[in-house]
Structure formats: structure tokens, C-alpha cells
Length: 97
Image 1 (cartoon, rainbow, N blue to C red):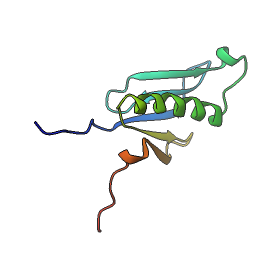
Image 2: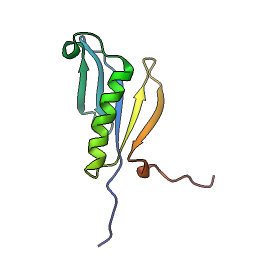
Image 3: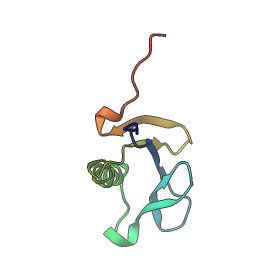
């Protein structure tokens, strides 16, 4: 039997449209809500940097348990910023183009 790598799971950190929730982390393929970063937890609004830091810690945990994942950050205007892959070895190889 071949030793296959687990499939890369893509997560999106995006500003939330729901009241009281600043940011949310969703799984791209299923649209499932994974984590919510809401104001009531801290007592004040989450910044993008704080939500990103928490999401990175969560995805590092997934990667340690053998699930490679990618974090994509959606901006308020709907476009995507740079993506991050955990662990780095799960990055797709560059092809001669």
C-alpha cells in the first residue's frame, strides 16, 4: 500500500458580518465554522493581528497532529491577502512554468 500524504485543508480567516463577532475562521471546502473571535470574550474588539495570532496557533496544533493546512486571510473588501501553510513542508512544489 502506498504511503499517501493527507490532503491539504484550507481555512479562511475573514471579517464577520454577524453582530458582536469580529472575525471567524471557516473551512473552505465545507463552509463549516471552526472558530469565532467575538468581542464578548475579550470585552473589546479583536484586531486582525490578534485573530490571526489565535488562528495560527490553532492551525499549528492541527499540523502537529498530521493534518497539513493552509490559512488564507480575506480582507474587508473581499480580496485575499497572502496565504500561510502549516507545516511549511506542505507547501506545493514550484513547477517549471
